[in-house]
Image (tube, rainbow, N blue to C red; front, side, top):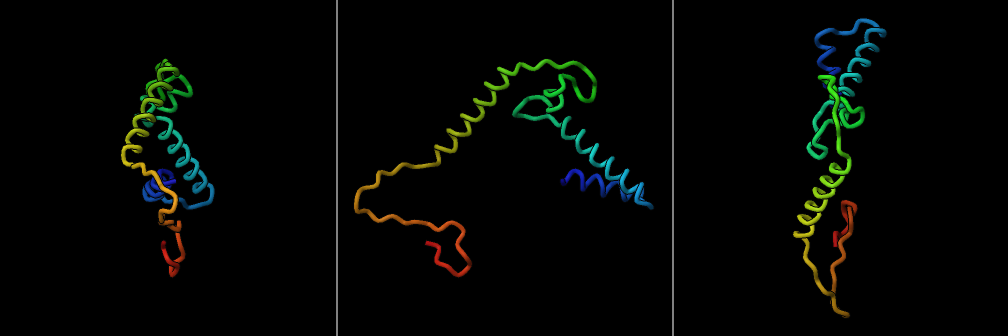
Amino acid sequence: HQAIGNTLRALSVMNPPRASNTAKELVDTAIADAVFATRCTYSSALQTTPGGLAFGRDMILNLPLETDLQLLQKRRQKLIDQQLIKANAKRFSYDYQVGEEVLKLVYKPDKLEPRA
């Protein structure tokens, strides 16, 4: 949404639409630019562009691309595992005993309600 809005803003400043037909063309151009930019943006997780992955060709230079999907899946799983280890390192375990008191937090209480 933001990319389309920025493109519309830039195009309308350079060439303000005077009729509904030119406004529709402006919107079509902005959507096409946003789709192209999305397909051509390099993804660090994929280590390629989404367009190159989907179509097997570079979206700008029109060169063939080969993608090893098994290597890609292993790389993404390794990244997921590393992020999971990092998230779990911040957690701590605690063995609750019968009869102990626990604090139950209320998720998103109203403005004047107690928070615990």
